[in-house]
Length: 250
Image 1 (tube, helix red, strand yellow):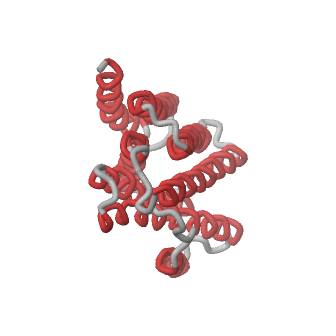
Image 2 (cartoon, rainbow, N blue to C red):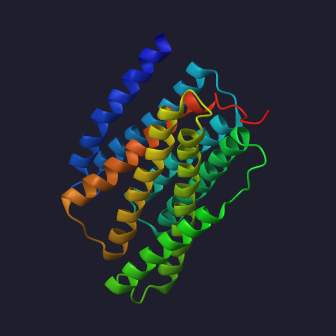
């Protein structure tokens, strides 16, 4: 019971901390915004840890999700660095990139457990991933936000492919649970894994358009940051439910 109370308090603390971070993050980075970014990122890692303890989840899914959350923490720290050095951006970028790959593997582990013999990628996953990537690239080229920044364009295309793969893999698992009814926790899984993947994608797409331009409105920044932290919390909470996945065909 104590751990459940701590989990509830952690989620409430995150809800309170993110607006404070956003307050100090406008119009730009500051020492206070950096401190509150670390606090906010630490809270979703703590949330994941508490979910592991509460559920007793020792599956590969839980371990991978924790690694993804920790990588998100380091990504937040380096991307929000006050020194603003180029290598800080690279480390932060790579932290999130690897974090998305870890989430992809976690979702695949859940799919493999629930549907033994299922292919790593389905044709509709790949089609959706490439269509989303093509649309994003077309919009970026149309807006000319990467004009004269070819290396950055290539990097964002690579990141976009991983991001959309994470989205389609998460939705494949979450929607599959609804379609086949293989899990008593199918609604919570849809709301944590499925919605989390969608919100994370929305956040990263917004960031992908704003970073090259170097400017944004306060409302856009709030949506970008808000969807990101909600996604991380949802991924952390998914640990409470995905551990109970069982094979459809024993």
